[in-house]
Length: 238
Length: 287
Image (tube, rainbow over all chains, first blue to last red; front, side):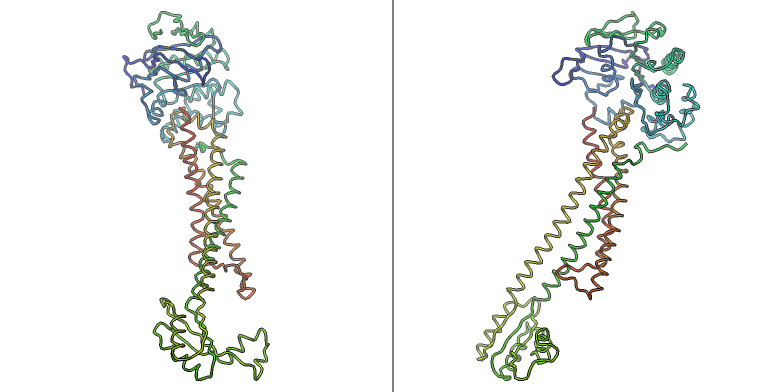
């Protein structure tokens, strides 16, 4: 699915603000660019607006003002069908997993492919292999209610990457797993980034991840002040 | 490894909705059958009285013969005959019993005539003809009574049709509310599918298929129950020699079969359409 050019930023925020109703802005005039194939960590204190920024990036919210482009496509100009097609290029690991309770781990992981209309025979082996890789080979038929927090997290990650997205967005993906699994997942994200060229944006509090990822780090505070912690060229902010 | 439906299996809400739709379909089908029976009965009643003319002659049997001849002379008159004593005895039997009319009791001289369906003002024409021939007669073409019957039957038809329309509208409204409730209960599923890149039509399709199936099943059960109820009423009517008092008599004709056959289809399509509109509107609230 990786058909974006290196020149186009994978994610571009231009003077983006967001407020809910008449409340104060959650994000104020944020501008940033994540280059294609970059690996970026988003940090900041709780309430800084990390999750909101991610929601804007994976098109769950529209900005109150400003413009968001994904892979060079201005999302303001897209109709609902266009937005749906664009979402298929984005894999998301939600903070609260958001697995469907009536589906098995296998069915949850395969959900994006099913939504895209792919026949099961084409993806079945890949999904099983992916679940084995995240350590859930013996939990294929388990429903979320019987899975531990860490197992749910891994199913959610499998669901996010099963479609080989151009952009992977994860909100605290290692929050519910032990350090060993956290390292393993981090390596998975890095592998996706290097081998498939997937642009990765991860919001995390995990200092261990920040120190060991070797990634660019974007710090968000108070919803409108962003600091570039590293000098890497993978993103620019203003 | 077969995949489950993307919507959870039925829950208690669906069972309650099934019952409600089933009951509405039963009532709707029964109302439609009654409306058809009322419509049919109204036509029969109206046809029965339209064109019937009763002429009472005052005078000798010769006057009666002359009046009969004059009446038959009109091309608009399909048939005319003088009522015999036996006819009078049959008509009066509820009051006089089986012993017949007592000797010496004066019986009116009556002509029963039937006009062609397109005949106009036959009462006036006959009365005028009798006057010209010096025959004293009272002509009753039942215009006033038939108009009353027509008004009553038209009202019965209207009430039946309104009842059917009201029940159909209620069923659709209930289905729409239920769909909305089902959607709210499964909002998380809708959101996740939405964020996985599902198009609105894909998500709406899931709900459409679910509610089409529910409507078809509930409609079928409702129609079968209505069929049973109609058959029972028909049986009861036959048991009482076809006397159903003032109620329109139900039948099970081809048209009734069509009504019962269409009930589940209409219920299914209404449910599907209501689901589609509700889901598309709800999705429009998402980005």
